[in-house]
Image (cartoon, rainbow over all chains, first blue to last red; front, side, top):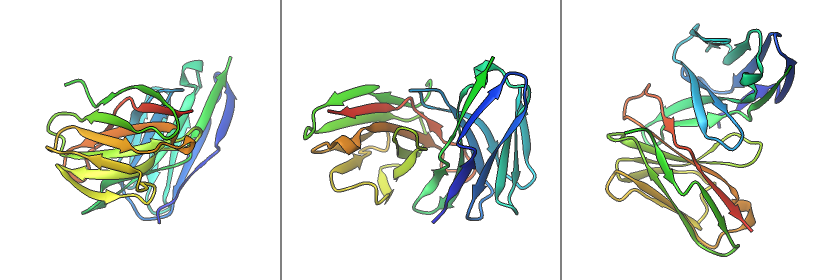
Length: 114
Length: 114
């Protein structure tokens, strides 16, 4: 059974600081997604990482994937209050009867303080 | 087409009542997924359709739950004899039938069982 673990689960940081969220998964997969979720809202897709060594950046967020280590990171640079949200990583396993079902981590609740 | 649409957005029901949710996927998306998200957790896979065929059901989907996608377009998720433990956000996602394609999530239906 695929397991996806994120850490930390809770992160409180000051504006302007840098930090990294880690996502480990237990089964070989070369597709990993990062989502953002605001309270009471649905999931907003941030990054799709499709291959080993993939790195994608959007604004103050940068995601990377190491399939050999089964590890993805989401790096936050110079955090601002608007980044406060819960961030999920999700691993896709493709199967004939399961499509591309996603297994999600528990989420990292990020709070950026002024 | 503006994306995956779910209805209703919120539902409050008394324990023991039946509820039905609807999901309209993005046009021409063959794959449709239902996920459930409880407070403080990541979404968990419930079931998957490819066109009108329900190809996989999670063990989370008890006998009280049933999902349909009668013409391969919209889908419904029904919960019979609701219990307080059914309170959650129910998310629908859809995608093309291509291995590396991304799934897009709807806004979700938040169910509260009182």
